[in-house]
Image (cartoon, rainbow, N blue to C red; front, side, top):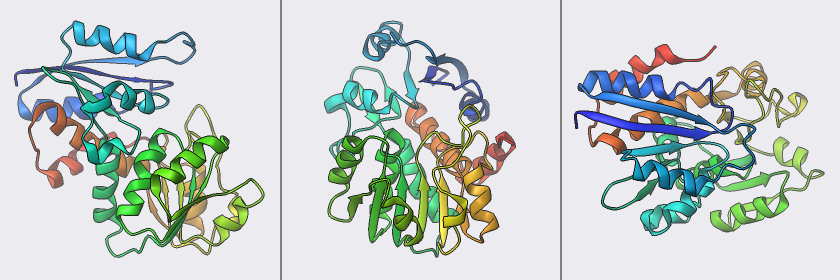
Length: 277
């Protein structure tokens, strides 16, 4: 591959480091990158499927997808998602060509990040905030890593129920009244909501409920040091950051687009310069 034409679709993505990460890896591989950010914030009439149809017609190699379109991407990919990933109901990368393929490098990236950052930590019982696209990747990854139970809280009860069904018997949902108890009784805390992003400050976890858990993960990486992870660090929890996930996700996305597997240790180190404040 001599050139790569792709982009990223999502809301409020102006601060993403993804194009810079791909550019770094493409330069190392001698590939010319043409990348476009498609920020749909404020565009209520955006038609995901129609837009992606246009990219395919324009001979793009593929497109990456973030909040709030990961479920739309899975629907678009349909049978183009491998059977073992179809149950996630979320895709963050679509690869075009003779056939359409939908994958989820959030899922595989989280498993890799956990193995590197928290290799001796038991997942245990998890309190999971959010049941959208990123939760559909992180939840199954937690199950694969051995979670004993996952309690889900989301502002949409239907969305939480759908995710719990996908995760199986280890998963339950919590009402607003039950959520504090679930947090206190958890071994690990996971934020899979947009709360904490630069445009949406805050935390899904009250600081006074944090302290007895063992670990925490925040899917948000702009900024890296969110209020949630700051509270967790101050309370002594081991933390996995959204930027940790981002680097693994970016490497796997590059592999998916190009078929090239960079040296993970070298590339992870090189990508560290992109860490948001």
